[in-house]
Length: 226
Image 1: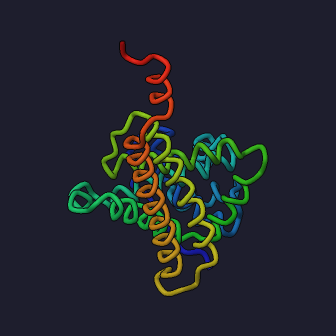
Image 2: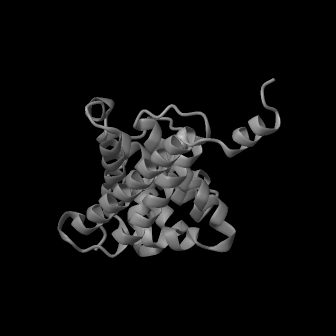
């Protein structure tokens, strides 16, 4: 049975971006039955009282445009659930966990739509777009967590979180545990593993700085002070 999704209210004269944002969660709900197709867009438009031609124009990029809009809706849902006030009292690890869990909660309502979306994104012609969407999610997570890195850490942090997030989505798809406890446990283990790796890397870096340099030693032998 189809269930009604909640979408943002539309202004009296909406732009295409506003139509897309309002219909995105409705399209996702219907995609579980009709796939990421024009039929899902038509059904969403009917539910929201939007002209079907306008709705079709809002998603003229096809399935990828629909999935993109839904993931943007999840971005917004995550930020609504994890306000700056809530995150401000957390350590970084807890912030990342809370932000990813908020995304999972938003996605879990439409698991079949997610399964179909990931199947589409895994197609060879969509791999680059899938990577872009994964990076966007990771970037939203780190920015919400207060990250301001602009050096190589900016990229490594996002790469790590994108990998954790992608792996956790696959676990979510088949998780029937109460409150998706198994998915949360998997997420916790993956974040713990990354934290251990980062601590080990920091120790190795510190030891390397303290370790005597063979190059400097040889240089002193060759060019000794006179």
